[in-house]
Length: 138
Image 1 (cartoon, rainbow, N blue to C red):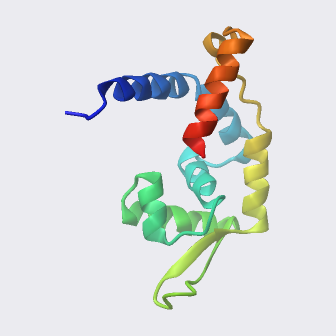
Image 2 (cartoon, rainbow, N blue to C red):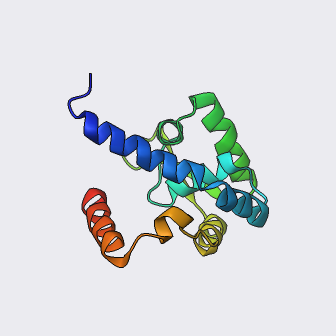
């Protein structure tokens, strides 16, 4: 049993709100980039920092062989590059190329309006929610 069932309920509600309302954005970024969404998810994770293939797999919740296939695909498209890890020469770090950063810019520029239920909240509720989310993110 969870130590905080109310937090679990809030989390499920937030997840549902996001997942149920992202299909339009997903379709748009797939169309604009020509990439499968599985590759977009990996590029998004690499945007914050370089990772090993194992870390990519963990971040994208896929197994290591699938991560290797995905990184190979992204590398062949010129969107990522593998470099020797500075702390462990046996490992390779995967990072975005300039072309990969251009894809991230396309993702960021793709319209992703708030769902109607969220947009319908009054300014006070939206401000309170923004404050809470900022605390959670930082």
